Image (tube, rainbow, N blue to C red; front, side, top):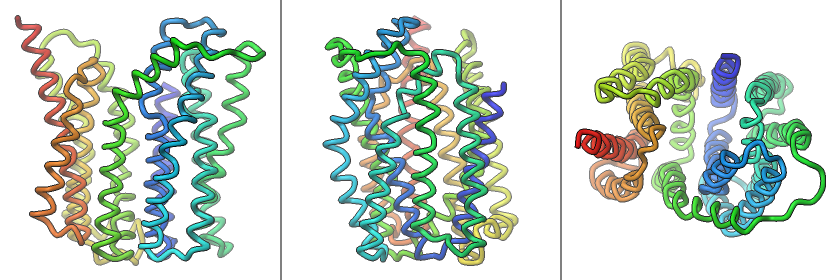
Length: 405
């Protein structure tokens, strides 16, 4: 329960921090920050690239053999570094192009790219390997650390604003510093568990993790593609003001994150343990998890000014876009919940369908909507959830038919 509360609080603090940045950064700065924020998420996803699947599987089979855990850590770090050699250069090049397109000066671009590399370094040090702490039942410790760091970030943002130092460089620097501050506690806790000394990489561990990379990397790349393609069409067919507006509206929809964290923690265990009437249970749980999104849509439709106040006067004219953003967020949340419930049953055979369906959607959206507007970009983003729903439905129906036979 403490872990759940900590997760909800951490998500809530992160959402508030994002709203403050949207409200206090200039429109031009926030457009640049929106690009960097998306790229940070892309770096984490792509450098994991499915390697975490094999790592978790190895820990699950060999736990609590700490020597094997230490060997698995060496393997996961090796593969993540190899992935980074191929992934980081193109990601940085694309980031530079998007930053320049959104009006960033050369000096600012160079500094931001350096901060992205620092963020990558910090991410490599703690992410994935922290799974060991979850296996050691130290989840509460991790969550309290992340909650404390989220609170520190939230307190620092107003201080920078009051002191006149809040801009895109200081905002990204703060994000990198928060990632760095996570390193020492995580590594100290891990080192207390693992035996001292040098541990060799096991070929079997490498082979298993590579299998996870081959299976998951296409889906991970497409997941990142979804966010990048929206920024691309806005950056090249609209203005930096539209990019900032899109990013600011995304911050409003992140108000759903604490509710999603709670509902996932509540719904997933119930559905994972279920054995009968799963179709009815699935619909019921998805409907229940969709209530916060529906409430957000109602508020956006009836009182859009209330939500726009959260991100400041720079975006006060985006009333229609606020309703669309809320509807897209509600739809995406419902689709994500449905897929997550089915996936935690181990039903992910047809997840790859998200890729062709998403590509088809890109073509349809380009022919149907004006992608050079915030509305068109939001609709493009929302349509990617169609693939999630179709993949989850096929996987669930296939399993239901198999059980019936």
